[in-house]
Structures are given as C-alpha cells and as structure tokens.
Image 1 (tube, rainbow, N blue to C red):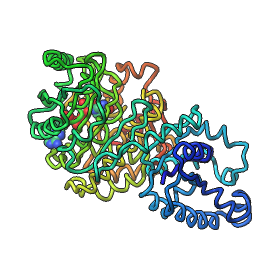
Image 2 (image 1 turned 45 degrees about the vertical axis):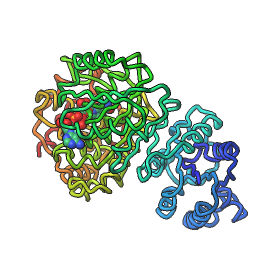
Image 3 (image 1 turned 120 degrees about the vertical axis):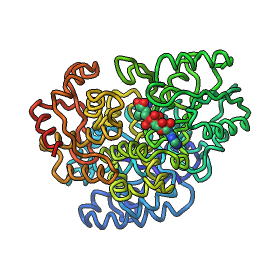
Length: 524
Ligand SMILES: NC(=O)c1ccc[n+]([C@@H]2O[C@H](COP(=O)([O-])OP(=O)(O)OC[C@H]3O[C@@H](n4cnc5c(N)ncnc54)[C@H](O)[C@@H]3O)[C@@H](O)[C@H]2O)c1
C-alpha cells in the first residue's frame, strides 16, 4: 500500500488519484470514506459530533484500508498523529508530500477546513511536520510542481528496488539525482550488490585511512564480485588530509590509473574521507559518481548525506568545496563497534541537534538511552542513524543548495565555529563545541522570550546524557573577532534559534547585550 501523508492542502487527493491512474492501483481517500460513512462532510462531522468522534472513526477506517488490498491511500492531515495509525503505517510505503506553509496557506485559507477555525494554522503546521517527516520513507516536495510530475516522482521512487534485505532505506529525493541511504548491519560485504546501475563503470577508486583498511578491503572485494576493479587509496588521518595537495595527489593517481568518467569513487571512512572523496569525484573528468560508505557516527548521520564536499584552506575550514550528491550511501552500523567512544559522543551531538530541531522522539531516545548507544547496541544504532538520515534527507531535499531550510542544520554551529576557531582547531572536539553552541543558543532563545525554561532544561538533559558539556566559560571578546572575520557573516552574525523545541528559526540577529547575558548563563 502506498500512503500519502501531509498537511491539508498538500495535494494528497489529487496526487493520489493521478498516482493510482499511473500504477493501475485503486485509490482511497480516508476523508472521503468518512464522509461516505457518515453521510455528511468532514466539517459537519466535526461540528455535529466533535473531533474525538471523528478521530475514532478515522482510526477504524484507516486500519481497514491499510489492512486491505494494494492501493494508493490519501490519509487525512491529522491521522498520522494518532499512535495507532502511526503503528499501522510501519508496514506501508509512506510518502510525505511536503509543501511549505506559505503554499498550503495559499491553497486552504478560503476553505472551510474545521481545524483552521479552532487552531492557529501555522502552529498546527509546525506541530504536524515533524510527525510527517518521521513516518515517511520517501519525501517529495510539491511547491510549484504539478500533480503529474509529483506522481511520476513517487512512482519512480517507490517502485525502485528496496536495497539490501533487512536494511532500512531512506530516499533522498532530488529528481534525477535521487539516491538511497541504506542503514543496517553487516552491509560491507554486500556493498557491490547494492550499487545502482553505473553504465560503463570498470574501476572503483576507494578512498580510506590505513587504520580502516580492513573495512575498505571488504568493500573492495564486494566490488570485484560486481565486476569493478578496485584501487585503494589510503590517506592520512584527520583534518590535515582535507587539503588541496591531497586532492591533487588523488586526482593524479586516478589519472595514472586511467580513471574514466563512468568509473566511481567510493569513500570508506569518517567525515574527512567522505568530504575528500566527494570533492575528488566532483572534480575528476568534471564529475564522476561517488558512493559513500561512512564509518563514523558523525559521517553516517551527517557528512555522507547531502552532497556537500570540501577541503580546508589555510584561511579556514571547508572553504573550498562543491555540491556533488552521492549515488548511494551505505551506513553499516556494525563498523561503529570499533569507533572510539569520544567519536561516538561527537556524533551524538549532531543526533541531539536533529532531535532538538525536528524530532522529539529522537530527542527522547538520546536523553534516555545514550548508554545503549555508547555501548553500541546495534538495534538502537540502526534506529538513531536511520532517524537522523531521514531528517537530513528531508531537509536536503527541500533545499539542496543551502539557501534556506538547510540552515537549520547549523543549529549551535555559529557558536561552535567561533569556539573552535578562537581556541585553535584541535583544542576542542567538534561535537563538544556544537553541544556548547546549542546550549548557548538555547539561552539566547530563552532571553528573547521564545524558549521557556523547560526547553532550556531539555537541552541540558540531552547533552548530559550523551556525555556532552552544557556549560562553558566564554566571552564575547573571544567569539566576536571570529564572527567578524567570517565572510559568511558579512551583514552581521546570524543565528539559528528555536522558537520551541522542534521549531527552528533561521537568520536571527541578536543584540550584543543579549549574547553577553546568554554567555553569563552558559557559565553557570
Ligand atoms: N559534508 C558535510 O555535510 C559534513 C557534515 C559534517 C561534518 N563534515 C566534516 O566531517 C569531518 C568530521 O568527520 P568525523 O567526525 O567522522 O571525523 P574523521 O573522519 O576524522 O573520523 C574521526 C576518527 O575516527 C576514525 N574512524 C572512523 N570510522 C572508524 C571506525 N569505524 N572504527 C575506528 N575508527 C574510525 C577515523 O579514522 C578518524 O581518526 C570534518 O572534516 C567536517 O568538516 C562534513
């Protein structure tokens, strides 16, 4: 069953009908079924019998439809919030039709949708969006697109193969550049089989570190069975490998090995390897495919997904780079067994960030079960990586080139960047700097009257549970020079803040005295 979810006005019925025609499947609209059952319209059911009655009936009808034959189903906008419905959706192909608030508001403001009379539409939209994202296996954006195009994209995504057995598949829907993120256990030996069709590919250039050789070799062997000749390139550990010189060496080595534009680069490593492998792949022959096999938690939940590649210049970190989407990302959580604990903690800072900006359940998992994650409980790791990948995929899908919503991912990072730079790179772990940065942002939000004390405390708890700091002694005098030097902040430093847990606001300029007071609170 293909289930379309999304806010009212996102086009579920129209797209659903079109998709049903394309696939030859029957179409069911749960709101229409409720209307037929009651012999009155949805607004009338709300008015005459009340919302609890409506929800109960909706639950019954949805369960029947989901338990029935193959079909395309358009789900009422509020149904996904019901835990019984959400549990039933586990077994369906759930597609989120993501539409911006501006667009849905334009479409529905003149309608007689009952909830719009009872609730603030924007608050309702912000409340429901994280649920849709969490439940969806596939997210398709609908702003400015006609139903036929949206239906065609869904058909291509949902009817495509489903990857490795037992692995979770998250689709990053980017039109022709759409790719899968597969999350599971013991996937390394089968990476070759998971590869998408790469017409003409003969060689695979595997970039890794000497310390990760055994993982790279398993990947290389599986590529051989796929008919690709592997070449393994080992680079030094750490940020010092993300350089122009290293990029040049790799490009030259590929040239010497007669790499062709249809060949493929494979990154097997943490964020450093992923960034460099992606960068090299984007440059060689003006761009060849890259497959990412991230081996650190941070790379699995963040760096490997989304197509940002890059290297450091002496004037700054990640200053040169490209957008080059991978054709596949394989997150094998079994390899995290050998990741040093402080690196797991590092990755947890980004996971906590996803929880804070978008997913209360993920936040709860990190807050209550960080011990299990640090002990590498595989089921927990799969869950945490898959949820994080979902969020990153959905955010990237709506803003590939980082012009809007992708800025959410910078939550805590404006402070973190200044903390890392003013202290000198390497003096503080990135994850710890992000943790302090998110805590500072929480204090700023609180001082602005946005986030209440409870919200600030949620930050403290999740960070403490992950073994991350939530206090630090910092002064504006240390941080400001970094912000002023950074070209990104040309028109003044801007922050991502939370108006509430799960509701990020980007581009916020903050008065100096508020920043100073936030730092005072951060110190205690
Ligand atoms: N492109 C993006 O969107 C993006 C996003 C976030 C971060 N990044 C970049 O990612 C980099 C940080 O990534 P990172 O934290 O993974 O650092 P990293 O790549 O340096 O890896 C950390 C350490 O862990 C080791 N390691 C990795 N996997 C291992 C495993 N399974 N077992 C044992 N050891 C293992 C590595 O060899 C390394 O020593 C930074 O350069 C950052 O700029 C990029």
